[in-house]
Length: 83
Image (cartoon, rainbow, N blue to C red):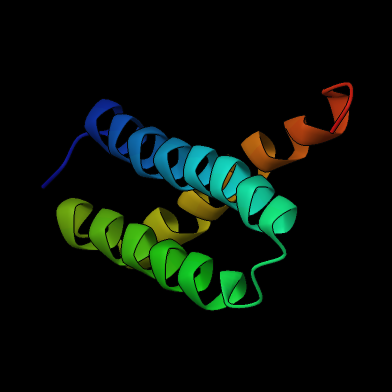
């Protein structure tokens, strides 16, 4: 059984990895006018959520937490100038 600190650390790792990759690659794909970006980013997001769920053993909490962390990082794009 995983304790709360390890659960939070794992969620933060996979969520931040997903958020940073989606923010940077999504921006790059948008600038390149690449039309297959959603398929790549969707697949990577599913990979991060399933990896977090399998490492923690808590499916619902891990998936939801990973998505919340990734969304929070992705929302930071709104605060960046010239994007």
